[in-house]
Length: 426
Image 1: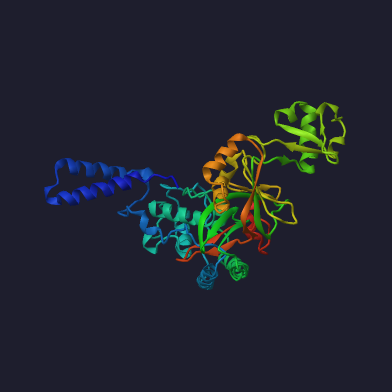
Image 2 (image 1 turned 30 degrees about the horizontal axis):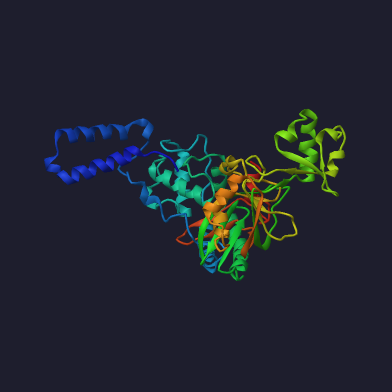
């Protein structure tokens, strides 16, 4: 999303200037500028640009959309995508891209021609761009569009994950769309209410929907393959600012006890206190025999604060899986490509924006009040006046219209196609 292409912009600016003045009145300085630009564009490292400077024409519709996944329109768009992909399959699918070099802007390689064809067939690149071996600005824009549709960093560089996604055969993508059509149809026929929250697990993304429109979209961290985030329907009834965090038994056994054996100050430094689970009396860490597993009988509770595992927020909703949504002090995790590393709960990026939306109708809790409360560090449970419907769903393929088909890895292997879980094995 941050590539250059400044020479193309310079070229367009120059041509606009020439048009204003008129070619007949162009000065020698202007011709010198044109010559300089010609040299830049002809430089070997720039690849074969021909006279195609405006890569915007390869963008066949925006990828970003306010269209909710759980809607009748999305189901209809998937049906249209299935028709398109059926035709692609009947025509022989798309070519495999076998790259021996890193494919990125400026590269000239025979594999680029195959990639151009692949992008054209899927609708990411205009056929007018041609089938040359040059990775030019047209291809750069098309690759970024492809990456955005697949939930990949849209940097225009064909790395390991981008190539893997590109080389999933067309017939498997068609089956993926057919499988997910039934899932989306079920969601679309369910009365979601005027506003709701939906977490799409394979996309590791959260949508806050109101009036049949996505008003907020948040990057999320969801469960590991061996600790999966469950599919569920519930209602968000509570937002806790400055929450306490109680360590699960698995973390106590595998992490905290070994750490205490090495560093007896670990609990104190991390503001974790011990309590008798039955009497709720606080226990001094120095009274515990850390060479044994006796600590497993105790409750480990971390005080609110910036280093708390849930940071500023915990969002509660009734469910049989003891999962919740929350903030995290480790914001860098949201930049990761594979965001499947929780123990089943859902971490939400920019969760305070979601808090404001959830508590909009709860008297006395505007953004300013919430921020002031968080600064106090005091544990503050807030009951949501009108509980907001919540859905954890599993959708790996959908369409938002205009030929834009979104595809994700089948991280939990529920689509029945081994090739779709490739991101988990890379």
